[in-house]
Amino acid sequence: MEERKVDVAIIGSGSAGLYSLSKVRPSGKSWVLINGGHTGTTCARVGCMPSKAVIQVAEDFYRRKVFNRYGVEGHDDLRIDQAEAMEYVQDLRDTFVDRVLSNSTDNMSDEQFIEGYAHFVEPNLLEIDNGQRIRADRIIIATGSAPIVPGPWKAFGDKVLTTDDFFEQETLPSSMAVIGLGVIGLEIGQSLHRLGVDVVGIDQLETIGGISDPDVASMAVDILGSEMPLWLGHAAEITETDDGMLKITAGKKTKTVDKILVAIGRHPNIDKLSIENAGVTLNDNGIPDYDLNTMQIADTHLFLAGDANGDSQLLHEAGDEGRIAGFNATNDSIQGFKRKTPLFITFCDPNIVSVGGRFADLDPDTTAIGEIKMAPVGRALIMAKNKGIIRVYADKASGKLLGAEMIAAKGENLGHLLAWCIQQDMTVGQLLQLPFYHPVIEEALQAALYDLYSKVDAKNETPITELVPL
Image (cartoon, rainbow, N blue to C red; front, side, top):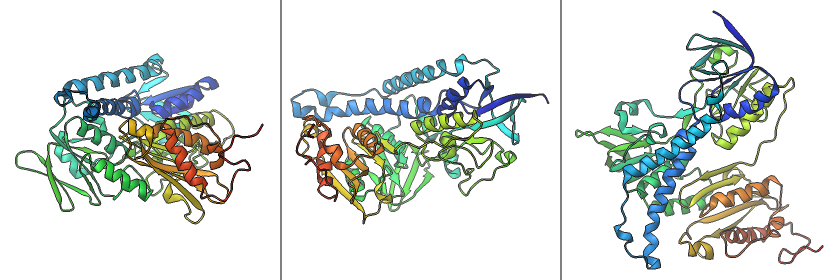
């Protein structure tokens, strides 16, 4: 069988693959991009972007519940056309996908972009399911991930949804159980509730949204649990009723629903690569061991980037990993790169955010904690969004900011501010010498930092209540 030789082969045209290509293409190396299945990236097609469209529609409609406070009449008569709302989401989704494609694979020749599934024949030899063979000096694996659905649940057919098919729904069911209350489950579950679906959220953990700080977790459960029922601490079991409905049981609680959204995680798409033919071994998680700073698998010619490595599965991380993999795949020497401050955002309302060091990972003996509850925050009160809590962490001795967890309005913005400051190795005192306007949500963060500053040993030479002398 005829082989084609290239310097670099990239498997997967999602975010990590395209960011890899952004480094490979200008290097002057010969390359090929191979992709099996859908194009247009998980983010644009079934992830970040369509989910935010649903969230925005749901939040705007739900906002009517505070109109009576302002003297706005007629709000009780507002209704939403679910089919029209889903069509709007799909139109936006298609726009995002088209933008990705028009700036990437649509502009590639058949020799550059090969549509088909690849697998390893030898360490440097790939075979596509259309019969083509590609021999490459370096290979970047960026095959993405897919939703996890337990085998027995697949028997319920289209009554069990994942994000891969949720955004194809033309209308919404009357009732739904959302199993898994991480980022996806919380975002879509709350949105479905706000769009008029009878929703129950289920998770076998006692916490939600990946929160590790017990005070933030408790507040989050109280806030979101007051809006829709949350069943925590028990695994879900599913059976089908005689009339075709699905019966959900978790612990002692039972509910019958039309459909289920499964959001219990995603698994890397490497099982069909025949990666054992590449001369690498898999760890207990079924993933090859790789270097987080170089993306190189052991000391091989292979690189693993994006969701395919099963790490953080976030677009900005996939972008960084793709760039690192692309750089190293086109250079003779392997270069390690410092990774950015961890930042995780759940776009439920209020936002749930974790930035930098998480509570569970910090030493309680050397860590100071500051907090502010959102209830009395002026700007939040005016917005009718004064629910939540911000908890910030610092090294007790040096005052260096370490991380934060929160559930708060505009947490997506506060999280970025903190991530930038943590990455600059700033102390709490240095943050408090920065400007804070009035009245803004950032004043809540300022209050939490003041509380934190009072608990650290290191203080600024200039009192933080005064201006810095010239």
